[in-house]
Length: 281
Image (spheres, rainbow, N blue to C red):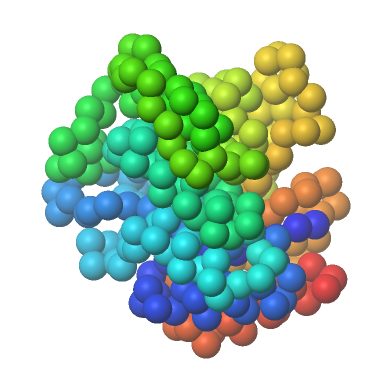
């Protein structure tokens, strides 16, 4: 089973040490988080915790995700590098396409683009972006970005964006995989329709089994081959050898894990070694 590790809450300069260690240990991928700003007042409607509160505080350090991915490409050799998830509808599609393309080029094709539509209305408002209609807008943004990545002159006329012919250079010989985040029924349908894979939220083993069945069913409904659609399940606890074995025995090909949040850098490095040992490496 291929393992993904993600981390947040450490100093930004620690990410290079974590990514290098993950690369050396044989992890499949390393993901960084995304938030632009942290509103100090917001409705507690985070969908993946009963409290409605997110797993970060306003003082939690967040990097610009694509600057960070670009930084990590220079200190790693093999590991795939992703953002999980990139809140795309808070951005301009051309600016996002350029940042992602640069990281993809510099990494020799190791980028993974986890995309989410966001949940915090107040963050959108602080950035002057519309919260309503963000899912539909995200789909159109992905279409625009894929056009731009061809490196050819392209134009677009859509519901949210319109522009005459432009060209983004250099083009990409290989567009990065798009992994749609979220576990709502609507998110699963969108993932099956417009993405290359699904990057799930931190969830229990039982929920991940249900989500996997649901997303693969939607992939079949969309007329696509489930064998060619990536399912990136994520555990909602750091886990142990038994949990990893449960996922492996259930046939999961990818599992995302995050170190215990209270651990400092050395504790996270040690935990990463234990996880690979539990996975039979």
